[in-house]
Image (cartoon, rainbow, N blue to C red; front, side):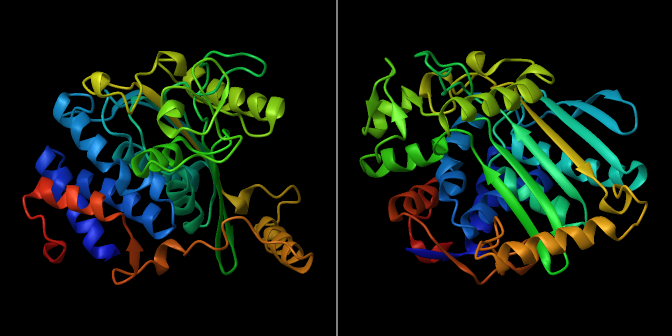
Length: 342
């Protein structure tokens, strides 16, 4: 079935508010989830909302916490999320990075001790929408084995980058596993077999069973090189920010661990293109970025993320496809199991 962006955002905000999040934090979280849906990233959209709600109810994402400042040098800000849900925390960190980059030319904001934050591209796109370049990193439960190994060591090590262009923004957003774990969960929900090469079982053997994959491992993107990049993201987040390495993070989907805070790390880095040009030309970087995009198109390629709707162009009336059973479950949690009541 299809629902409008406004319907999806409204129901999500309401359910999160009922769960105890403040209106502003519920709205910030709902924004990230509905943008993911509008971009076709259902694996990071409303599919995860029931687990967020269950984790909040169990104490795994406490709602009465604030971002606590640990270190503040000006260009570098480190925050303690105290186990809270990551969407509103990374949204606030992104806003802080934007403000500080305007002041200093570059800024890094780290959020320690946080929870899952959804699609990183949403935050990178907001940085780019403000005319800045941004990098966003995160970590999570371990699902990737070391290259040649058979033990969970690293998370999917997601990474996103956003860059301003004359006619909008471009966003690179990917996990460093062959696929994001949310896609495995989506296949598990519909009992759809996985394509070859996506996942491994607990012993490190290839599997097409999504249920087995959820308790097993994912294949790193690009073999040994993909593992090296995933290690880099782990070092930037779990290593530098912490407090837990991915191998010690509670599994997001494990029902018996929903009361345990994940305590994962996010890192946002933003740069001002007006101050990065080596010749001191404020317009130099933007000119080259525009040239890069044009040359990519002229060479028969596509700028990464160019098929995604710009943040400002996502309309309340836009429709997104949702699984009937998922929408029914969300409506039932509100107590109105009727599609028309959204």
